[in-house]
Length: 223
Image 1 (tube, rainbow, N blue to C red):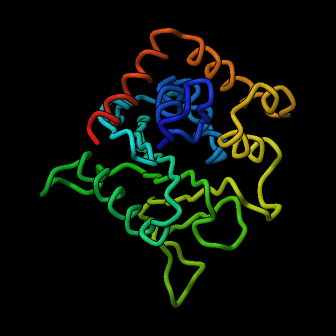
Image 2: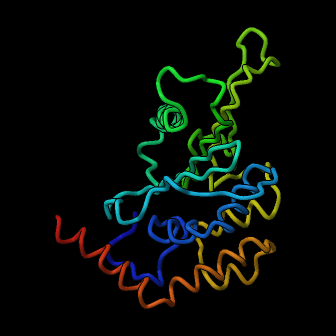
């Protein structure tokens, strides 16, 4: 996650602690998912999200689940460039895990929900310069034929160079690694400004500062 020399004021949204605290806000979570997916989401809940307290301080990723009535979302902030070769299998594992959370062995598979596995990466996972890579299952012999299993995997790249997203999405991805007052003030994205308001509240909250300090110290003591 973050370097032990960082203070809470120095954290970016790409740092696991801050990412988890911000995305714990259901309305922000909903709007971020809407922006990434380009769809309208009425409401989300997070009954099985991963809590910061359960994450080792040295981890460089933060994962959470979100649900609506017909869809399940798995979102992970991923900063481990050296492990990018394993991300496709990680996505496969998460997809299977989400399915098993919905139905038990032997249950009717028609109960499965539409699923999205989303990685927000601070590196280019496929080295093609894109900001977004979207995958779904299709017929190899007939590529226009989608399998229709309603399982989608999305990899976002904060360091993309191709003009493949709109300005608001570009602002959001850039903000992940430049979570500052200056950047938020000049960003064209209302979503970035809304997120930054929450970031500021977190960073100015004494209880949050204490929690973050304990979070960091617990790792140092375990080394």
